Length: 146
Image (cartoon, rainbow, N blue to C red; front, side, top):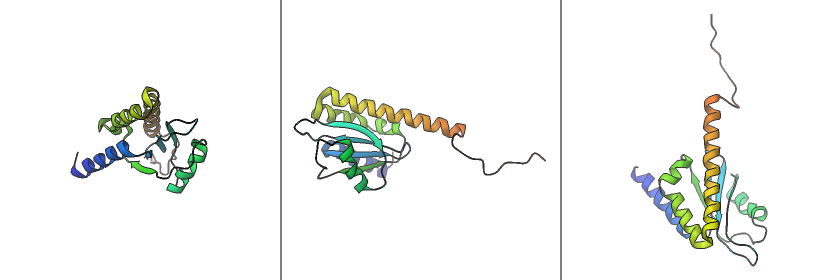
């Protein structure tokens, strides 16, 4: 891992350890892993998966749908993850997220985060299989056999 990757990972770790509401968007799979550690009278912390949105404002507004029992977050940390889903685990970021979830909401919240991460890994594997098979792709040039 080069210095820039190391700095990026350190900044991601810091965000995971300190953010109250964080959306990590996994570019390859078009999904976001959202950790909302806020609490309401009848609402506890949650970790969920949602589609990637176009703008930070769209993500902020998505909380009306995702967390209707809570007001919109005052602060929202947005973090792109350009690499493979497995790299998030291999760099220790998943474990940091699970640790934070255990701290804020116990094993149930950590299990929700683990389930969400497994869903992302499944989607990435499907994406890669489809890419190899050419699913959803169109041939734009074909070699003639003459």
